[in-house]
Image (cartoon, rainbow, N blue to C red; front, top):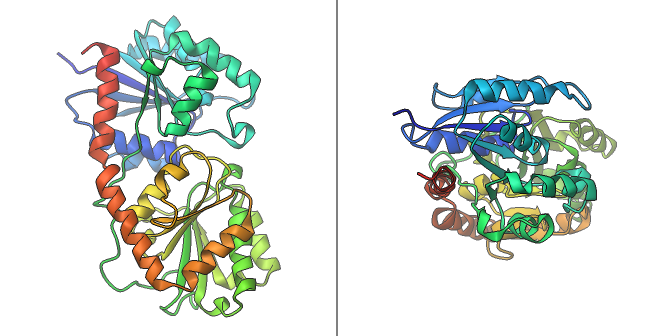
Length: 378
């Protein structure tokens, strides 16, 4: 008997935390338990090659800009052709897939919440919540990646708490591990000499990540400690609309040579090990994969106190939480680490210990398989 087929519906499969979570899940799930197909409403990129298995099919429905009513017909026909045993939609942008799946006869349906975007940071938009409530009878089970999102599903969306499972993202603590040797230099010629404090960040440079305020915090650090121009450096790995604004801010402050924004990279784990401090300036988060990966690499984390970040970062133990859109507070946190190398090491070590104890890949996979099995009645 063939294993059940799960159709994972996403908006777009490119570099991002949600997509990275799908990659991790499918790479670590036993191949004989389920078959998988990834349905992308927009399309997919070479990011799909991070899957370490060749039995996962990808489908692009090529959604047109704006309201593309033909999308629902294309999704319906694909589901009728694939005949998946279970459909798993993720986030608001794919939620309408629940209506299509019900019409197409998909008998088991799961919806995951991974975080909200800048247009609805706190999940209070009445129009979007009406859609969520209309879809509620069709969703057999919800998965939330943070306690914050699980509470919101229960108290705002009105989902039955018995049908909500909170599962933290897991991190590959073998791939992401602390630096074991002397750091090699990165960046263009002259960017580093070897004894710098490297403040790093990784992610899509989208509006919700608020990277311009990370740059402002770094520039404020240079004002608070002018000697930091010699020893402090900023690295942002990722691509997106905010990159140009960040480069403009650095140029205006005559600090271009103190920061490196190379765009997207395929060697994230190796690059993270070169950092000393990890920074996340988001206006909203579900559970940040990059925070988990940074902690696994033994880095202290300076992050905004939004979404699930406070569930990951233990204040004064593994890092520092600051208010969103507050570059002054973030700069003060940077200054604390700039002045105290011992604190950098102790917070980083505590973060690595927390990952090993609570955020294993195995625990995440067990959680998802438990939900899939229960919904399928296996």
